[in-house]
Length: 185
Image 1: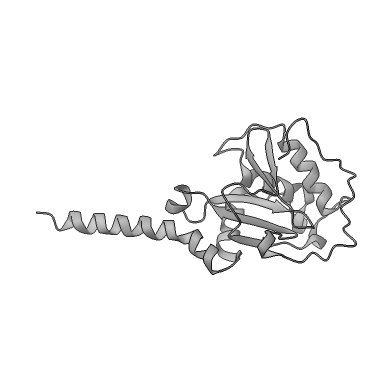
Image 2: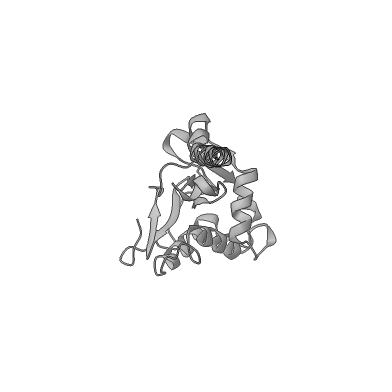
């Protein structure tokens, strides 16, 4: 976890040239990726809404988890269940991928968290905008949610079940409740 007292250096050597950038599912390492996991209750009702983070070139995950709190490599709400791999060659500017993540993480360590207005999705969108990823500066929260929902890759079968089981239970409950109420005379 990073807080106001612990800052990462922008000139920190990441070993970018030497890294293989290989995903390691067992260790939750997803280099150059946006990662996602469900939030209990919220994802059960809205399966495209969950917790989001972004990974460095070595797969270390950064996520904005609360007021002045960016968690490093201990993803809030559990292990990632989906990821969306990004292409580091699509960033514009003089910094490297990891430098952008470090810079934005340091900024978010000073910010207050708001579930609706300044959250983990905002941090990832701001990073992509700062990077001018894919030549754009207008990445938004809704687009990131939808991209991960429709184009994100599931990590494995068990984590896929974890992603959708709450939603199916919730929908089944509503269906049974509705069906039962319609037959009451």
